[in-house]
Length: 106
Image (cartoon, rainbow, N blue to C red; front, side, top):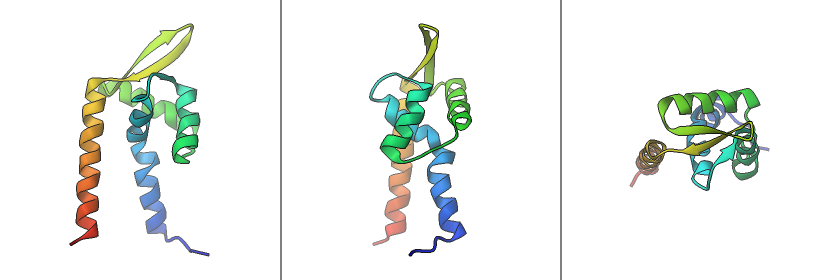
């Protein structure tokens, strides 16, 4: 069995929970979703299981930054991605791709 180092565990956390906004925008590109739907989809699509409070804290910050917007439908809050969110998502992906290419080397 593979014994993961603390460094590798930190990497997994940094690339998932601490950058949850990327995964959320990916999901919202498919269409608007409720908060709990986002939480379930994170688990189903990416095998990421953040605490519910973490998901809602990230959603709150994303709304505040203009990456997503929320609306109230039948007493429930629905989230959808904004153009700013899509632009930031694309820039984030390009950054990750550039870093990955450099790490792979020639």
